[in-house]
Image 1 (tube, rainbow, N blue to C red):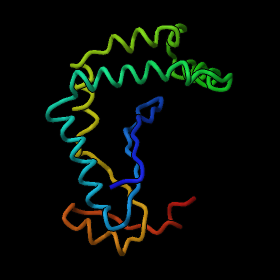
Image 2 (image 1 turned 30 degrees about the horizontal axis):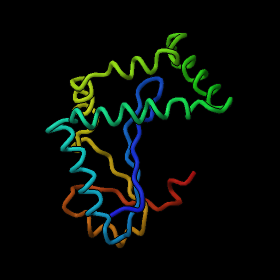
Image 3 (image 1 turned 120 degrees about the vertical axis):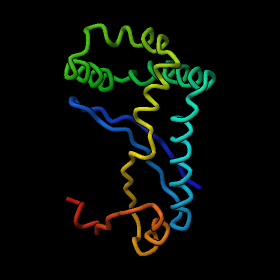
Image 4 (image 1 turned 180 degrees about the vertical axis):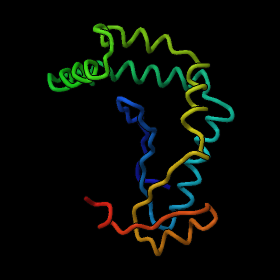
Length: 150
């Protein structure tokens, strides 16, 4: 259904958001949207599993050193830690704190942030072809690209 998909938390000093970004053929827009909503609903309803948590922890731990391999990346993380008022040893203790994350903590976060009922969906494409796929989802707004491009 997709040529690529990813998700992330976008942090701000006073909050933030969780986002999923993907792209697909126009004809499969609704199927992909339903699939994403289904994955999020499953995380809320049945929770993340121990193997999934293990896999994510291993991935994040493995990527940590790679993420910091350039002076620019290191400076960026130090600046972010200072901006958000994190402890001076934030980067030094990252891996220990990552390992300490528990399954109940993860599942509480999933229930809080992954609720498909609270989603705001932004679709970019030819509205005349996408709108027909969305009629059963409730209200939506169609905006020309020019109205949001600036």
